[in-house]
Length: 315
Image (tube, rainbow, N blue to C red; front, side, top):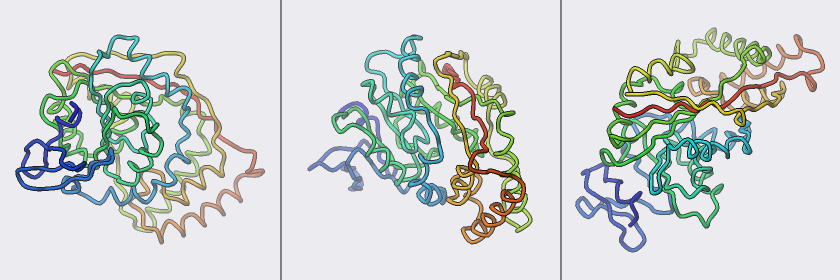
């Protein structure tokens, strides 16, 4: 059993797990957890968000245009800024299909990914080179991570906090599993919002119609951008930002991309909208676009920005 496995505990009785006949078990309560780089802890999952993300798992990467050649640079840039030591363990909360964690795995860094969606994790697993054995995937809730206290060197989050309603509980969990000398590294794209006029118009129309149909949408999500940055600064000892020109990105989003996202319910807030209502809204949005925009196959927004790496020192 390597270090990343030894710091995982049984969520039922809190005792250390063991590998027996290629299965991971708890010898105290006899609970058996699967092992194929995915360990499933369904008892830690407290709501139905896993079902929503399971639904969009197949479409997720199609609607998140990650610039791989840019994201692949992130571990190297962080390492060159002396935030890694040999043997460090990094854990990503809300790892999804692995777009941000896989580059760390490919750079031979011991990695743990945690996500509420088992289907997302299975896609993650298929994307990793089979020769890489330096990672584990945990199917568990971010509010109840089955990891021992003070055992992880780096917590990684990427486009994550805007989905979180109870940020205080998440921060307590992050600080519980971080070593005293550890870091929280948050990676978020800083996008030029003025370039997204069509996207804003169409999604604003969509959610306005959803409210008219009495869909129970939250007034606000978690924190994002400068609001999140200020909040985290107040909860950690020290803050440092890496802004590297090599992390700039630019790509088009066509109206067809926006419609695909709406149809398949892959926008974050759509988890609160029923499938039946979404189908009706999709038809209305298609009519709205046809009436308002001409030559829709050529019209697009330009997504332009830079990945910012925010590093917070544990207290």
